[in-house]
Image (cartoon, rainbow, N blue to C red; front, side, top):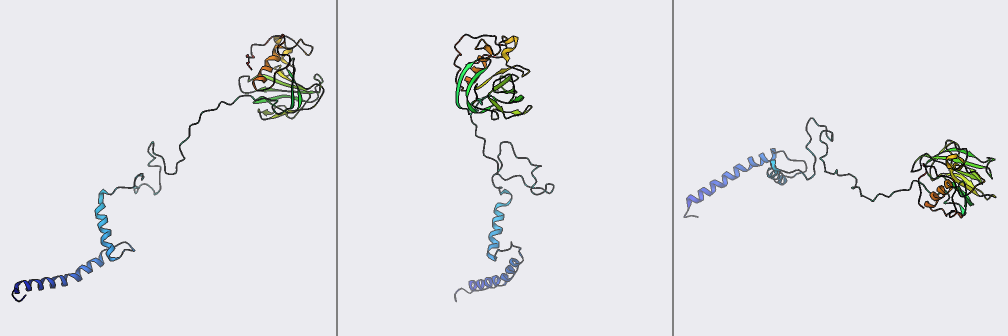
Length: 270
């Protein structure tokens, strides 16, 4: 160093300059605002990160539009979700399932104990005991347990309100006790009567529009009453409907048929 006095003098001068500048730099660092919780060394890394992001910083994927001064925080009305974009908490997508066709009617005798199919006359006769349901959606038009015109006294009629036979009347008669009232709306799950162990069993079939008696007694159906001849065409038609619902066939359905089937009763294939 004794041979280079100029370089030594420059080095000493530079050191003195750095020493004099450091207090000012430290003072400037103390004046720079920084987020709470950041130390002195953290301040620089935070500022560097902001400078790197700048105006090119991207918002998180899926983030909604920026809030403005005119839009209250949390407002969604001004910015409806884009079509085809699911919200974060939306329900799972609907699983498409094959539609299952439900029957309009169910067997009214499905819970009868010891069900015995008997003859087809004005309607269809059965033996057994237990609850009797309506065929389907209907309204009760008659309900009595003391009708002298039928053995056992039971006489219930209802008008179907849905399905292919909507508008037609059904009767359930003889050894039955009604469990419904006139004007009541029922379904295929409604018990409309209880069949008891009488001497005649029950009879069920198509009733006259008035609900007065069986349809087979009207002139347009042949005018056939309780004296026969049987089976009637109108009785066989109702029995075929019961067969399509799983009820056993009557014991005389293969015999000659009497009377006329009115045009408002479509043919039913069991």
